[in-house]
Image (cartoon, rainbow, N blue to C red; front, side, top):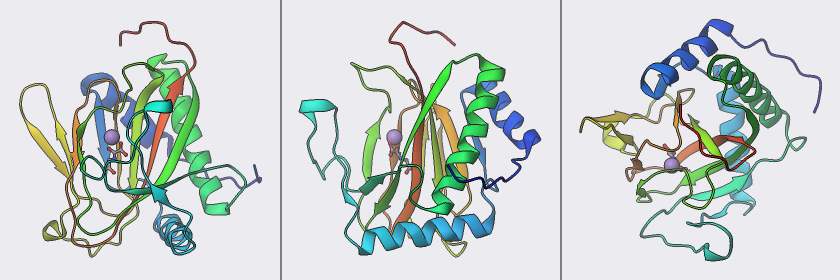
Length: 213
Ligand code: OGA
Ligand code: MN
């Protein structure tokens, strides 16, 4: 990876880890610097225009299929070394990974992420991020890349369903980060009236052994 160093705000990362430990999720409205958010949004749009984003599948391995009645976003997985803003994002997430490991002993060794573009009307029905047959995804991290003019009427909220029956909606405004435990946070993406851009990633551990937080 290129030697581009941004110093992540340690206090911010620690707050996220504390939130996760206390309640299983965290929302930080101002996580990504504005310039980086803009550059990543441009990169996402560029890739979409070049036809690099593909309809996202549901399920895993041979059982994967495209089902727009479940999810209608278009995605592209990130690889390091392709674009400078993407590498800076990956670096930031690696700092978060290390802070998570120090605070929660999750043994996270790996991070996978994709751009996602939901065209108008697209949604992702209520689901949990961890696969039944693969429990390596431990922590989900979504960062929004939409500009600040996004209004509640534009839709596209991330709706989270807590155990006590309470629901919480996140407006997908650029720079905002939402993090939650992949195994037990049902959530859905509501349809929007405009393109909805994000980077969604998962911190993973290596083994398949049972785990309790
Ligand atoms: C997902 C997902 C949430 C969002 O990609 O699994 O739930 O707000 N994304 O984009
Ligand atoms: Mn999800």
